Length: 311
Ligand code: CP
Ligand code: NVA
Image (cartoon, rainbow, N blue to C red; front, top):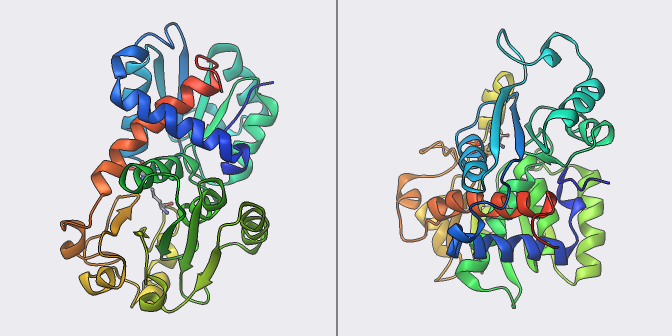
């Protein structure tokens, strides 16, 4: 049975740490992994825009010796899925050609269905609900800055969206206390929260949802934010901006956090909206290390899911 990364529920705490540890090794010694996926082909499918995910997967495959096939999910030159070929048939067909499927799409159910009907690993490269590859790079960045033994506090500020959900799920798996600071009517999905609360209780980490930004960031090791308007939400853009007004990350917000706190953002950033230049370009900012870590963490993930390295 192929193993997948549909969301972070596919990884135990030990497995998540294995991805991070291998990511650190790959980062330190990339040439040792140059031929590990020699002869493999990996479909990387996009139904939404991307800079980091597309480039990091394409370059990552190349660096491991695999062939990346960058595919567009729909449109005039896209896959037949865009003209009604079923997800299940697409999964069965791709599985006859490629060794893994990476996909960025709308509904999580599309990723789940590909995994159900295909026979190769499926990796979620962002859906409306989750962004697990991002969370892997985020945990790696936190560990590079603060080590991994002690519990750390990460405060996510913004809408309870795909990035928030994956960070919340990462918390109990990576020894992180996670606070989601959001407006009352942009809270994370209650189903996700129920699972996160169970996992946090079992792992001995803390999780909470708060609405007072300044209070939430007190004592944070990392303050994290994301765009106020996610892909596919353009029609709601004005309403979202109105609700999130007051949740921008400014220098004053960062000053509430620990002295050695870092600022994280999955990027792309909308400077002047969810974060100001005074933070993006400051000593707090770790956003470009974080972006780089997408490459290393995803290479590790591919090596493990394609069984080129042992779990
Ligand atoms: N953070 C992230 O996934 O960036 P892209 O949308 O550019 O891939
Ligand atoms: N929440 C954002 C993340 C982009 C990487 C979106 O879904 O557009």
